[in-house]
Every structure is written in structure tokens, then in C-alpha cells.
Image (cartoon, rainbow, N blue to C red; front, side, top):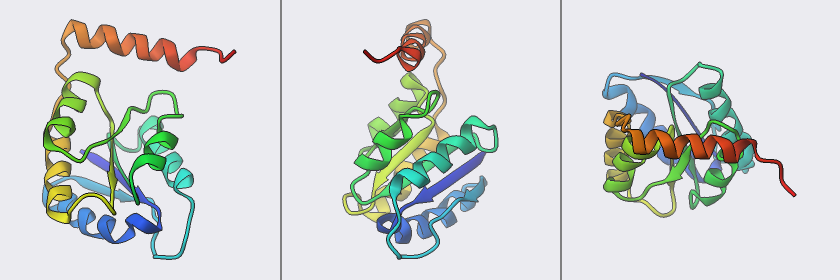
Length: 150
């Protein structure tokens, strides 16, 4: 699997560790930055991760900021991106199986490194169930993505 990974400055150190973990799992890693601790804006990296998936350059993404909130909000502005903050194993698996989540978002200031490694492993090993009820719900999400705001 091709996995794009990006972070802002708050997630930089965790991202460095996760790049090795993803590679050790046998996946191709696409690192889109940031590449240092200097302050940067998380929406820029959320967009880069999302666009890599939407353009077919990556199959899934991992996005890291301080809390995970800003990166998740930003990534979900891109139609077709289903990003979620997961700080527990159930959500990391269920998000893919039921919701076809394609971006795992982590808060570097929230989640321990060992848990983050587990979450990435679980996220990358999970598969969308394809059950009718989940497909129906995803179709409704697609409609919401194209809705005109009043």
C-alpha cells in the first residue's frame, strides 16, 4: 500500500517515528513534510495528504498535528477524504471497516508513541467491509459533500 504521511511542526517528531513503522510493515511511504520543528500551518499539510490520495498517488494517509483536531477538520474539507482522529484501537479499525476512512489523524500531544504505532498498524491492516448499510451511508456522505451551503 502507498501511504502518504504529513504533519505540522507539533507532529514532526512522531511522524519521523511512524515513517519507519509504516515502512517496517511493508508499505511504501510518501513523506510530504514538514521536515523540521519550525512552525508551519497544519491546513497546508492536510491538503497535501488529501490531494495525494485524491490524485491516486497514495492509497491512505496519516496526518499528525498537536491535537489532531485542526488537521482532521482541514482534511475533511476535501470531498472524498474521510479523515478521523483515532486515539483508540476500535476507532482505527472500525473507521475503515464501516466508514471507509482513508486518513488516520493523530494528535502528537495526546497519544503515546507506542499507541500511535499500534493505531497505524491497525488502520493500515483494516479493510472496508463493503456491506450494503455502509455503502448506503457513504453515498449519503457523498451527497453532503456536494451540497450547496445556504
